[in-house]
Length: 121
Image (cartoon, rainbow, N blue to C red; front, side, top):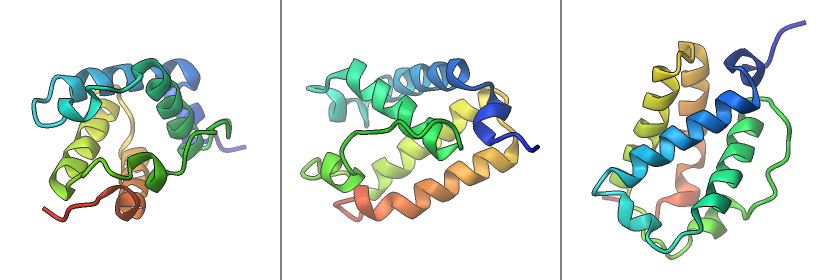
C-alpha cells in the first residue's frame, strides 16, 4: 500500500514543525507580518496544521472557515499571496520534502489563489 504524502513526510510531528517554521518566516517578513498583527496565532497555527495535513492526505480534521471567508477584507495582494506560498514551499524543501509533494502543494496553492487574493498586484 502506498503511503500518503502526509505519511511520507512524517505525519503530525513533521507537519507541526513545518507550520512553526512557516509562521516564523511569515512573521519575519516585513511585507507579510502586518497581516498577522491582530491574529490569534495559536489558533491560526492549529488550523494551518489541520489544513496542511488534510491537503497532504492525512486526517481530515480542518474545521475552520472557508478560505474566502477567512481572508475576506484582508486586502491580500497577488504579490503577497505568492510570497506566502514561496515561504511554505521553502520550508517544505528545507525539511526534505520530495519534489512531487512540493509540486502538489504548489498546485493546491494555485487552485485556491482566487479564494484568498483580493487585489491583483
